[in-house]
Length: 85
Length: 214
Image (cartoon, rainbow over all chains, first blue to last red; front, top):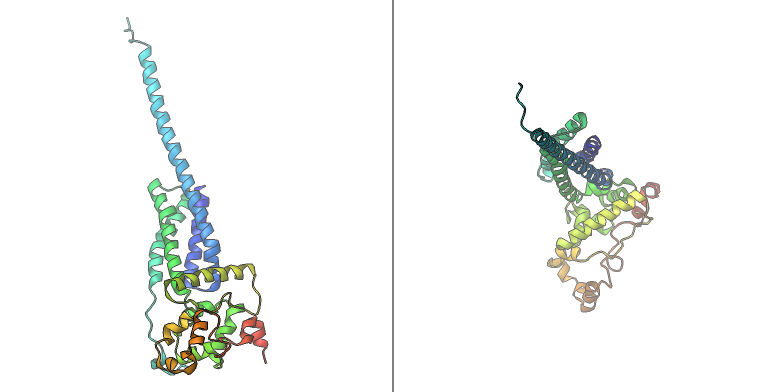
C-alpha cells in the first residue's frame, strides 16, 4: 500500500512541477482535475498504510508484553523449584 | 512583436516563486522515491513526506496558479477558444479590447483579467470560479461557438479606471442621469449601443473560423 501511495504522490508532484515550469491551460487542467485527486488518494492511502502499520506494531508490542507476562506467570505457578537431591 | 530596443520592453520582476515550490517539492519527491523503493519509511518521516509536504506543495502550487492564471499568455494558451481573441487584440484595432490593449490602457500582461475579473476582492473570486468552470468546459468539450459571456460584463471594471477620468466625465451621454441609472442597473452595457463590441465577432467562433476569415 505504501508503494501505491508513494507512486500517487510522485505523479501528483510531476503535475505540480509541470504547471509551475510551464503554466498553460493544459497543465493547469491536468494539475487541477488530475493532480488533486491523485494527491488526495495518495495521501489517504499513505495515512491508511501508516495507521495500519502503527496498529500492527502496537499489537506486536502488546502481544510480546502479554507473552512475556504469561511466561513469567506460568513459571511462578509451577511453584518453587525443587532442589536436586 | 518587433524589437525596437530595451526602452520598449516593460519592466518586470523576475518570477522566483518556482524556487520555493521546488524547495518544498524536492524533499517530497525524495521521500516518495525512498518509500517507493524501500516500501516503507520511518513513521514520522512518512507522515512528513507522504502527507504534510505534498499537501503544502499543492497549497503553494494553487497560489502560484492563481497568480499566473491572470496573465494574457495563460488565457491565450487555450488555443481553440482563446487564441483568436488574443490575436485580435494585438492586430485588429477597431474593437474596444484592442483599443485598450494597444494604447496601453490596460496592463499588457494582465489585460484579460483586468477587464473580466470585476472589481475588488469578490471580482477576483468570481473570476477564479469562472476560470475553473472554463477549464471544466474545456475538458468536457461542453461549450459552443460563438463564445458568450454568461452574464453582462461588470461595468465596475470599466469605472474603476474611467469614473474619475476627465475625458470620460466630459462626455455628454455619460452625464445623462437616465443613462447613468440604466448602466448602474445593468439594463445597459457600455458596448453594443454606444461603444464597439469588445472583441470581433469572428474571433468568438474559434481558431478554425478565425484563420479562415476573409
